[in-house]
Length: 87
Image (cartoon, rainbow, N blue to C red):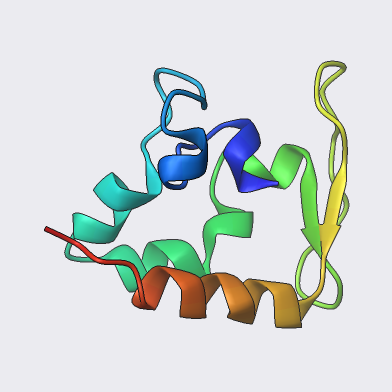
């Protein structure tokens, strides 16, 4: 789901939206852990992402497909990002 907008890694290194930061760039930030742990509450994510049991109702823009994640999927994302090689 993330690769619709973000460059996540080599698999989509030429993808993403130009103004959207890559996972590698976000991972290099001092507050990366807090950013990733709360991404679903940070704009523009609440418009199209909900996390079962953690977030409220979304107001879906016409050009975005809705995404519903589980807490386990958010946890898996955190594991993925923690294990990223950051240079």
